Image (cartoon, rainbow, N blue to C red):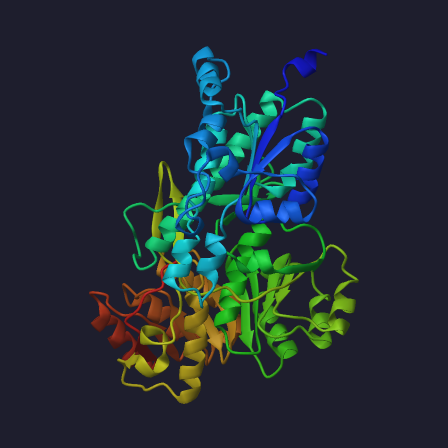
Length: 517
């Protein structure tokens, strides 16, 4: 009895939805509970066609729809019924004087603006027509007055609302949760419209960012850090469209490492394989077959590969799957997999097996700083400019062979996806030593040389940024490296070039840097 006293009975409900999912069941239950349904346009027609009794908005307002349906619910009769504060006698008296009955429930969802924008064939006029006006106005009105009115924007909430009405009405805490959800819904909708207007502005003055939680994660980078993964409103990342065929749920670190591996392997020639650990490659290779590429990539640094991510840029076959399961890895991701490969991988029940499309190039890259965000265009290895060997500049006396250039191109690609300071040593189309994330460039080279061991002899090397001193080139040459690619641009380029010539090393400048912090 006491709980019922806090419930707000629902006597009138306004329903106006583009997405008709679940609306007939909701309206049927409401009518069965004695609720009067107010509606208009396509929603009214849809409900009537399913036997639901409806009062037309036009019959309440005395005003017909106008401007081809652009104006239907924008009327004082409707908004007065939604916005009236029932705790104020003046509001209640004014409604009575005007012959207006309060609306206790507003069920509205909006025109599919984002879906229309995503359609490459949509015209500007079609997109403009999908900017909803009446819907957001009703949603915001109901959410503002949530002390008395419940608002539903999500069909998933319909069963709970219907049950509440059947129990005597909605509770204050229920209405507050729904109101918060409603304001988030309209905020995201408006943000999508702003993003569309800003489509040709790379870094607009106001950058609206609306994120929706997709999944709560077990924890973040460490067990004491709560975490979740969110999607940007209106965006579809590869991970949202991916299929996880087996294994444990993806963790925070799994997502981060898999994203890094997936972007790198997408830049390799096919067939190519990447082994990733802590967002740095500890193995990468291109081969005649996928199985060969995996074997060569794993040989780069098998100790670091333990518990890592394996990314493949071709359909995963049985032979490659057999080689993978001989090692411990956390995630395998590929654009597809054969049935035989899937059956083999199933023997490792905790192994996460993912198929997905490759990430799109470009877009914005954001990094949180206290009170704000650092925003830049995402770095990518382009198909022109400083990432293409045909446009590189040989600055040494020794000219690299075609074989050298192919290896340098491969090493440059891996270095461009490696944390700075980065030095990647490659033999042919396979990394044999990766020095990543070192505070000094010569330190990165020393680490790569140690990893590569005697495989450095006859190899090539890539540096993600210019060599500030000749020391890095000197130690690479001493270890047996025969060709180096780097951006150039140091004040001491002449000294570095001289070091290359003294050692008989080919030196190539790209005039493009790929720092990665």
